[in-house]
Amino acid sequence: MGIISFSVFRKKLETGIKAHTIRFRKEPPIVGEAMALWWKSRTKERKLIGVTIVTRVDAITIDPENRDVIINEILLKTSDIEALSFKDGFESINDFWEYFKDGKRSGFLIHWDPDYITHKAILPWVVNHAGFLSERPKQRREYTPSSGTEGLDFTAKWCEQCDRDKDQKCSVLMSEMNCSVLITDDKGQWFKHENKAFCAVFKPKKSYSLTARIAASKRAQERKGQLNLLTQGAK
Picture 1 (cartoon, rainbow, N blue to C red):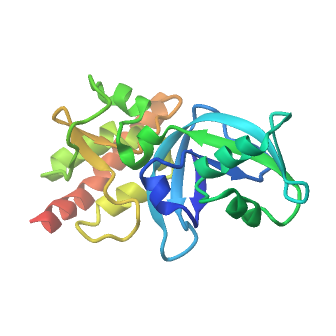
Picture 2 (picture 1 turned 45 degrees about the horizontal axis):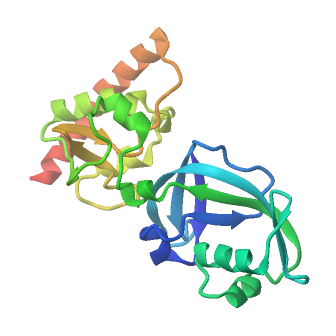
C-alpha cells in the first residue's frame, strides 16, 4: 500500500471534491493499488483521511515560466489548465501558478476513487475475504471483540492472514488492543457489516505455507491474553 501526505486542501479531500494530486517523484504508483491518504503524516497533526484505490496515472510537466502544462505529451490549453487547477483544489489558476512557481518540473498526476475515501465503500479484497454481498454498508458500526475467544477468532481470520502484520508490527492491531485509549491514528478500523466483523485496511498475503500457518496459529494463542485486556478495558 502506498502513502500520499497532504498539507493543503483537507476539506476537499475528505468530501471527495479533490480526487487527484500532482507529485514529482521518480516512480509512479500502480493503477489498482491501495493508497493511504494522510493529513500532515510527519507531524503531530497527522490523521488518516482514508484508504483509496489508484484509478489512473498520467505523466505531467509543469513550466511556470512559460505557463505551460503538458500531460501525456499533450500541451494543454489555458482553459484546460484552469479546469485542472480547480479539480486539484486551487481556487484560481493564479493560485495554481503561484504554488508551482519554483521552476519547470516533471512528475505524475495521480487519480484515485473518491468513493473509497473515509471508507464510504469497503475495499474489494476485504469484500472477497469476508464474503460480503455488498461493498457499500448503509450504516457502518465500529467493532470491538466481546471476549478473548471472539477476539482470537477475529485476529486468526484477519490479522494472521494480513500482510500488514507479517512482522507482528501492525499499528491497527496494537491500537485496537489498547482498549479505548487512542494511541495512534490507526485506531477505529474494525467494523461490522452484514453481521460480520472485518478490518477496513486488511491487505491479504500472497500465499500461505504450512509453516506460516502453524506460526500464525502459535502467535494467535500468545495474543489471547492481550485480547482479554481489550475486553476488560471495554467494560
